[in-house]
Image 1 (tube, rainbow, N blue to C red):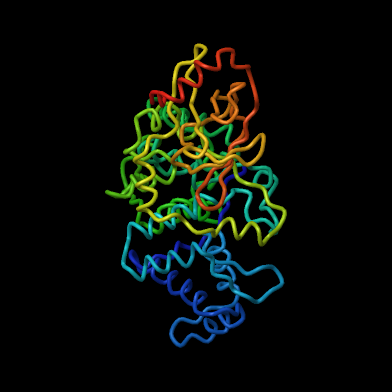
Image 2 (cartoon, helix red, strand yellow):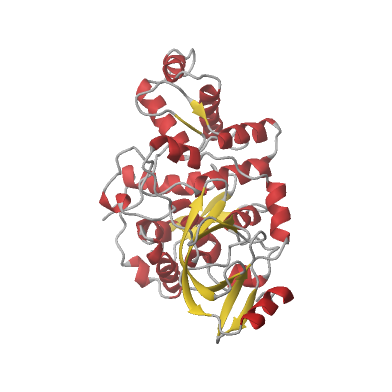
Length: 393
């Protein structure tokens, strides 16, 4: 049985536990040195808590996964990413909300198949199009939290976006009929180890080491007479996650509920070059204040057209044209789009278009591939829809 495998070192965070602060000390040591060999030497000769080079290597790999820094294969140069620099600045300013915003947005970019240029963990990971932290948080929001059984037996075994909504539905059904999940295999065999550590690390890292998420031991829905961890958002942080996913409470209800988060997840990008991947993973994050301001503007509005709900996409407002088939826009503007849904695009009103593919770009923007579809028979009518601004639903 294949399950998610991620690096199993905690997220660096100076605001939470001693373990998180210890990881932060490691991150700062990388930020203060441009030589990877020097960082290893520093920790191998540490006066109170020396560690071996292998441990430093594992820490480095985790920081690369988090989009904070990288060391290209065969080199000694530590490169602190723009996102990593932003995280350091937020920590220095004592701004926990900005820290959470930056850290979450960087995590959301990580592809389950792993870092380009590094060997995939297995064939399931290699063929995955899933952004695991995006899916994890989308499931957390749709289900209002997750138990350990739900995470281990259902969510952590999904590798394709096409299976994401079904997995959430399985959990929802299991809460009504617990036997449907209780009978599913626990990939850890009920014991700690590599699989347990990796899945648990998704919970820990996804919450930025207990800053965004909290857990409590509660009676298990699936194994009567036992307790298990249940994970929820800490007060004030759920709205930051929703904003990062393009579903902030300030948006009209249609953006948050008409199309489920799990149904409109972008795909993981593909890269052929290791450095290009790291530049994507660590690209600067738009400040939280800017994202909040953008969220106050209505997303792409919708109208009833041809017997279905159609979104109106306005060039320069909701998107920028890349080429004949692709547009790019911020998550907050394109949050309502899902695959095989019809849209009208202001710079090509001769036809309607179908959303064929979505993928997350660096800098918190989404690229959408459109397919030209049915011709528009009444151009004046459609132009009038754009002039009226549509009606969000």
